[in-house]
Length: 174
Image (cartoon, rainbow, N blue to C red):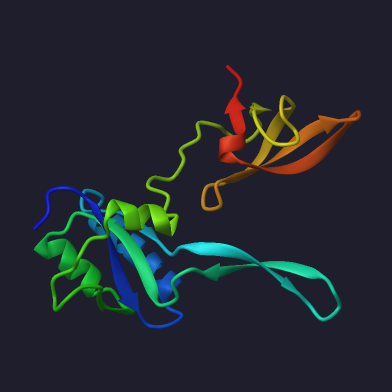
């Protein structure tokens, strides 16, 4: 059907998006389908809500409720695996033929093509290359690949201050 991986949209039961993502990732891992199914995403965006007491709360909302995006090579077998995942009601497209997203649609949706791969470990020193802490040195305390962020300690004014930095804000010190 297709020779290279493309983004496809799958319709799910409402509220099952993250379960479908987890089930698909588990199936890919268990059956070693990494050659077919490359990435599964539920696009999220931050929204600031103001509570009754005036406090602001940042929450993550699904950009497309009821849909999961899958970067995959479309074959009869990969179609079958995705289609028969619990919570999936079908691919988006006419009849049973899934239609891949165009490059323009993918860019417009804010999908990250590939997760950022950082070659750092907990306890390593890194340099902050952008943001308000530019040129500061930091010691990695925690790495969160899902959010693409690290928690690190920066020495400011003679004390260690915990900060959260995005992967693209830091670089490894050689």
